Amino acid sequence: MTQTGKKFPSISVNAIDYLGEQKEINLFELAREKKSKIVLFWYPKDFTFVCPTEILAFQVKLEEFKKRNTIVIGASVDTAEVHFAWLNTPKDNGGIEGVTFDLLSDSNRNLSETLGILDGGIHEDENGDFLRSGDYVTYRATYLIDEEGEVFHESVNHMPLGRNVDEFIRLIDAYTHVQIHGEVCPANWNEGDDAMKADRDGVADYLKTH
Image 1 (cartoon, rainbow, N blue to C red):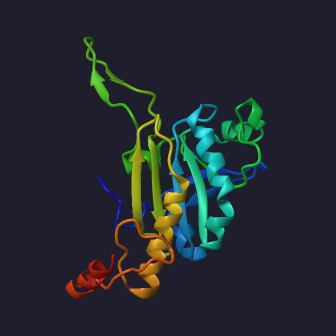
Image 2: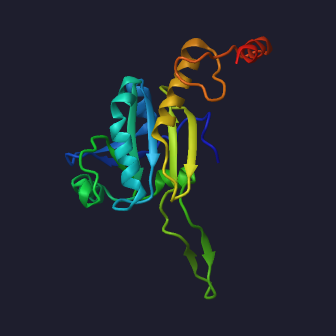
Image 3: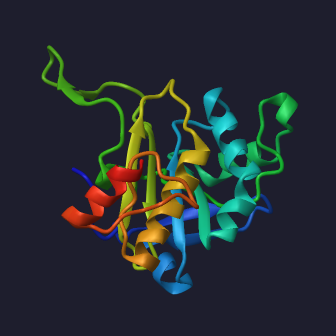
């Protein structure tokens, strides 16, 4: 079920940072309290292969998100202790040392189950026992949440497909333009491009010149 256009679930989840500080984070409340946008990106597992490339890519662009009043948070179903070990493992040994944003530890799957982003399913075997297939970890789901706790973008990639971090910056820029100017952003819009009025004349004027 899509979350876009809805309030993000008000569920508190344990989180940890690179210093080992643990806290409870409720993303809906955090967005409203800080009056900030949030990019929440889920990845399948710590100590894997595509996942560190994505996490480190978000770290490289962290200042760009901060300039846009946007908080970056990673998430998986690993425990906080595993997160902390990975955060303190050097990059040349498969770690993500140097990452400074919080990582959610949804080890009880309360939030990821609510969002419907876990792999696998439940089936009944020949003995009548119900078994779960898959690793019961999350797909590469991403949620952009506005200052009121409402989701304005969501996307879900399969496990092998890494994300384009710059695309989320573009989407944040576009949504901010809509918030400020009340215009809509056409295909392939980037900051500084022309937007258009959300009416027939606005579309016609835009198409005449593009």
